[in-house]
Length: 156
Image 1 (cartoon, helix red, strand yellow):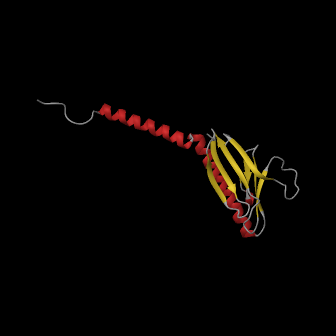
Image 2 (cartoon, helix red, strand yellow):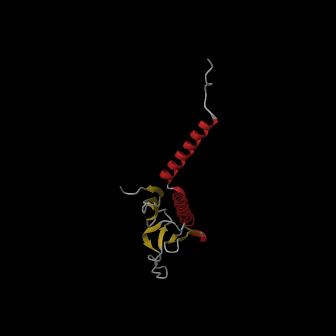
Image 3 (cartoon, rainbow, N blue to C red):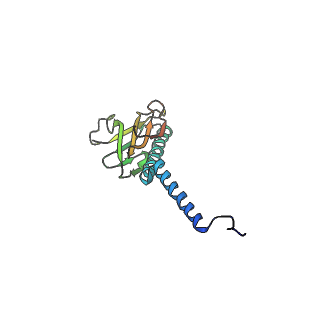
């Protein structure tokens, strides 16, 4: 008696592949926050890199350097005239010194700044990029000027 040959049909293999692809897409969007989360993470890493650059310039030149962020315009300015924009999605919150606070300049209303000193120290601050209950914090330690990026989880 001849039975059905052992193995899987092409249709069965395609169904399994479609199920694996669907599960992978669901997992990626759940863990990564989707495309918006990827944009926010990229922006957080860019801000961290510019903060580190500004600190390095302050140390190498021996003069204080400012990283200025404008949450309303969603833009930043770093040392040596570097500028950039942030994604229009999600919330952008800066916690720290107001721009112009140290030198009495009142034209920078609504902007925030992190000042780096020649010894590597900083005024400190935090830039939070958030959406869908999660996001990324870019923290600058005031004593050491260390810049760190870490994920912010939604409260449960």
